[in-house]
Length: 256
Image (cartoon, rainbow, N blue to C red; front, side):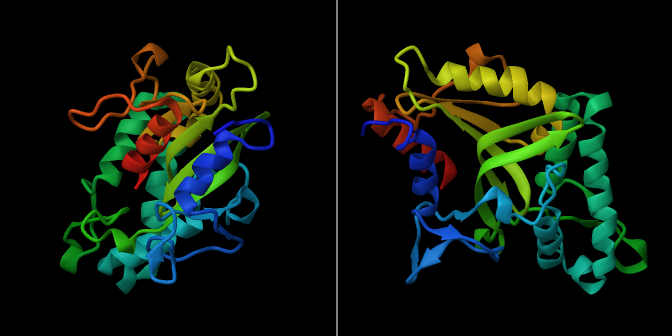
């Protein structure tokens, strides 16, 4: 496949994820389906303009609140409890400027993994809080958005693609279209590491990993990982496939 300004790597990955189907309104939980079949890799596409969030909000709190009620019976019984959880998550995000991105990311990860509890049980008993259902994936909401914009103070950054699960931006993809032969995945990785993570660290507090590709090679890395340590995605005992196939296979394997 030949890429140019009109036919971008970004669009190729977006359509691979969502099957080319665009949603204009908020979607519910479950993998994206059409006629009983999973569309693309199961992600719903919602444009940045159609997400229920403000430009200064890194999380899609409406989706997060719905998920907390859906996945936690103790919160469903008392929906006002969702405010207590969101307050704590928001505090971690806000605190990134003083605590540092690595610490904030690690703290948020404990919530994502279901290692945190709240006194929502009988007689104030602590119960585990789920942000994501790892037992029944259909209970989660999967959204991919394009040109995901975040404003922090006077700084505004726009990520090519962001993948959100239950309103949490878990994966960021920087897709460079190789209109210049000198452009590579490294340009995208440097943009993430040197500019996005430094200027809008709030976006990366829930981040699991970021991806950089120019359509020929794909590399991924965790927050604050030096770009020289970003690596390719390989299945066990898998040799490197041809350029474009490498990107397609990696995206399919990592993000299904």
